[in-house]
Length: 138
Image (cartoon, rainbow, N blue to C red; front, side, top):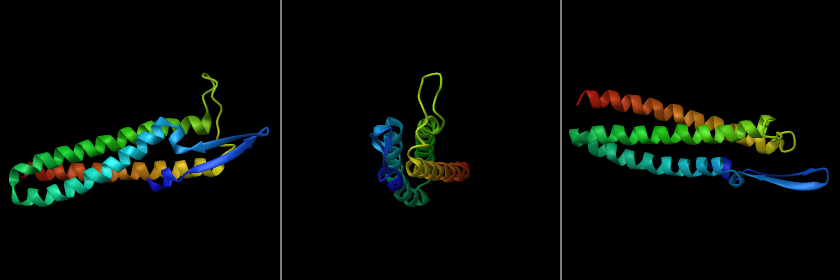
C-alpha cells in the first residue's frame, strides 16, 4: 500500500511535462482503499478468531469475513492490473498510448505493487481455505 501511495514520477515528452501518480487512476485508488480495508478486516478477523476458539458458532462468521476479504483483494488487484496493462502496452483500438516508455520508475513500482497485491490475495485465499476446513470440523 505504501509503495503505491508514494509512487510518483514527472516526465517530459516533447517539452511538455506530465505527471504519473497513483491517484490519477480510479483503479489504483480502489487498490489502495481496498488494501486499507483488507488490513482493517484482517485485524478484525484476528480478534474474531480468538473469540471463535471459545465459541463454536463463530467459525462460520470467521469464514465469511475471510471470504469477503479474499474477494475484495482479487477485485482490487484485477482492476489495478487492467490499468497497469494499459499503461504498459496501451490500447491501439482506443488510441491510448503506452506510458511506461516515459515513466520507467513509476511502471516498475506499479509492477512491484501489483505483484505484492497478488501475493496477498494468494495468502488470503489459503487462509480462507484453511478457515473453511476448520469450519467443517465444528
